[in-house]
Image (cartoon, rainbow, N blue to C red; front, side, top):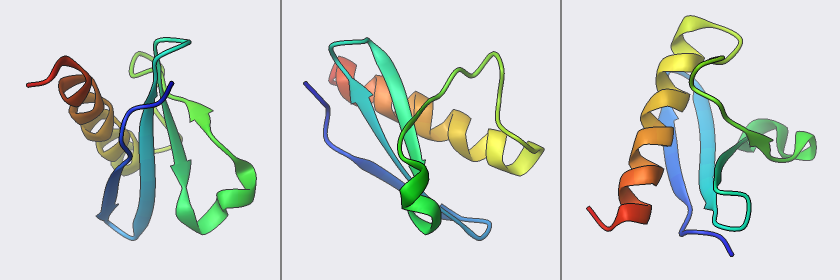
Length: 70
């Protein structure tokens, strides 16, 4: 149902991402705020600031490439 997890530890953020095969979406969580749970990430909307958007976009791309086997 989910891909392998990928992590991003950069710019003070600790993110974890996974690809949800059932919903065909990328989900990202902040390890420092794990009680907030998983959030579907949409790169057309971005995140709350530029740095976080850049990190989430990178994680999004890496998860899709992983799912494609590239």
